[in-house]
Length: 99
Image (cartoon, rainbow, N blue to C red; front, side, top):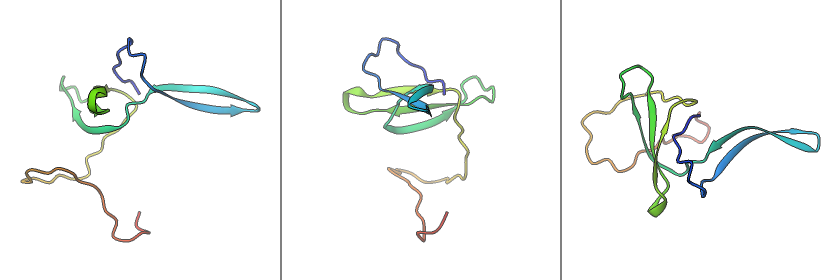
């Protein structure tokens, strides 16, 4: 996942994908932790078909905008038109065993 980053940000938290090997571990991949993501939007500024995800991450005085270019996928599952003033939306299962 390519995330635009400020290389001077020494307080940034980094995530790692590791693989155990005997009594040692090997770091397979390192990535910038952009949690919590408060909002996100899919954009294609160059109209090239290569969309990017722009996230609003963090909070209070530690908020940031991040552009995620590779390693993610957004799939539009539906569209609701004519709705205004939506504050939050989430998926709800009708039964605990629903997928």
